[in-house]
Length: 113
Image 1 (cartoon, rainbow, N blue to C red):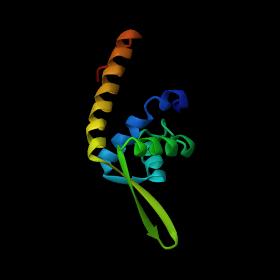
Image 2 (image 1 turned 180 degrees about the vertical axis):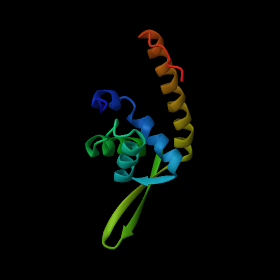
Image 3 (image 1 turned 30 degrees about the horizontal axis):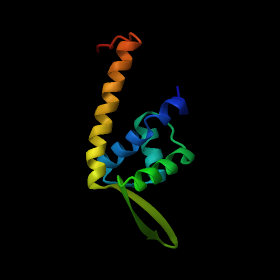
Image 4 (image 1 turned 60 degrees about the vertical axis):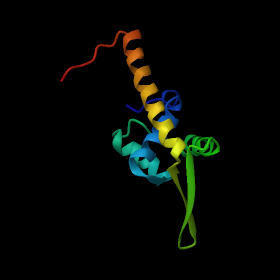
């Protein structure tokens, strides 16, 4: 099952920030592939959703960019700024609390292993 873009849209900033926290620096395509791999293809981030999100995070001062040339091609790497590191913790905590609230609201029982 692939999750709908509607569900992913509300969590994309948090996903991107967490990816950068866990991996120090990444380029866009690398992020899409890593998320797909980690979620066993349940979350597939499109470039059309990712790059506008990265631009907003950059404008908000949460990520920094660095161009690296590989031959004649330029690759843009993204990293968390100090402000981004703080914001990541806030966003992850907020999302975890939201998920707990949704479980309660929808009466979803946590499955014990």
